[in-house]
Amino acid sequence: MTTGFHFWDYLIFVAYAVLILGVGLWVSRDKDGHQKNAEDYFLASKSLPWWAIGTSLIAANISAEQFIGMSGSGFALGLAIASYEWMAALTLIIVGKYFLPIFIEKGLYTIPEFVEKRFSTNLKTILAVFWIGLYVFVNLASVLYLGALAIETIIGIDMIYAVIGLSLFAAAYSLYGGLSAVAWTDIIQVVFLVLGGIITTYLALNTVSGGAGAWEGMVTVFKAAPDRFNMILDESNPEYMNLPGIGVLVGGLWVANLYYWGFNQYIIQRTLAAKSLRESQKGILLAAALKLIIPFIVVIPGIAAYVIVNDPEILASLGEVGMLNMPESGAADKAYPWLLQFLPTGLKGIAFAALAAAIVSSLASMLNSTSTIFTMDIYKQYINKTANDKTTVNVGRLSAAVALIIASIMAPLLGGIDQAFQFIQEYTGIVSPGILAVFMLGLFWKKTTNKAAIWGALLSIPVAVLFKMTSMPWMDQMGLTALATMAIIVAISLLQNKGADDKKGIDLNSGIFKTSPLFNIGSFAIMIVLVALYAMFW
Image 1 (tube, rainbow, N blue to C red):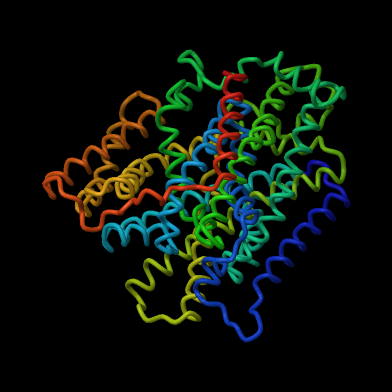
Image 2: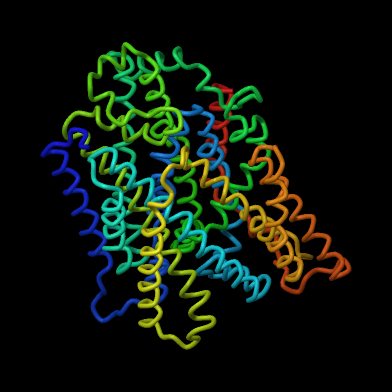
């Protein structure tokens, strides 16, 4: 079932695709007399400037999970879901100031590599296998599913063909070019992403106001659904179990955010590829600033869709088109694709290109990071310790291709999930608290031992499962699981070392966390804006 795509829409989308593939393949080319080595392929030759890092972080992060999933959550529960984005801005500042100096000083390729240097090869392998499984079966599969769902809804292509198309598009440049191709094309992807999001938000609000403009539409939406603008939900709200009130600000969301932005390979890999620590921190600051505006282009459209669907007059004004694939209870993730069908010819192509940009950039990022972890932490560790650069790069490409094939098979099996964004967060949250506990204590507590870290990582799963059996919100479960795991690690470390520092403990000298005046001023400005946003929508 097509939703009104015309020649100009297809032309714009094809032009976007050609541009991305062209730039990706151009930056991927081998320079005269230089064959790609591991640093070129996996860390973009450690040459990324701050603006490429900042935009690439956002492009890797904003995917179908946000455009489709967060709009769906905006439809179902409102602006409260924006806490994921706004809290992420503060998290990025923490990562830039306290995590990056240690990671970059150690010259890392992968996050599991840090685990080996701080703890042991055994723990590194455990976490590497976990991350590969998570990327393939949860992240890649869910992005492919949500992206294919959007394409199926918008232009009527069967889901299986949409999955194949997205896979081939992402593979076409990322498998050959590595992180360099991914990062440089991400700059273009972000332009499409933000432009398409702004256009969709404007026209959704303009529709609500009956053509009186976006501001009038925003006023109308606020009056029609004031409950959808509460950032802190009370226990009477049916979505309280997903976003448990003040616990969002002081509890489990910190686990999700610190884990994702600080210790997630496909995010942190961009910062490791920076020209310098200062350049990396400036990129982090740019990403944090962009995070402040993301909810306005991914959550507000979902709220607007909710108002349209529940207002018979507005819905009637849309005619028969308004009834096509209309989102409803249990199918909230159809909200964003449904809105796109109301865009004029040409703009619909831009908005669709933005959605494709969000999906493809995240797929490419995840593929590159999956191959990096497999190649550097599994293949070179256990299969071929003496592999040269050519072999290493080829194995990286092959492993990415295999991961993509597996995820493509898994993606259609995720059908029927409502609010996929919440689903992904909840089930990643079973394992992320244990990982976070291991890293936080490994970074900042010298007494943490390898044995304690291994036991903490393994026992965190049954602890999480036990909390899963309770009736408390899953976000609170995450917070308590992280605290319980930290307690286990501390107890075992003290018993093992009798209070002495571990020999691999990190020496945090007084100057390591010193940041530039630009970073400090920018961070302060972002925190002021955050306080203002929460005060406005409390």
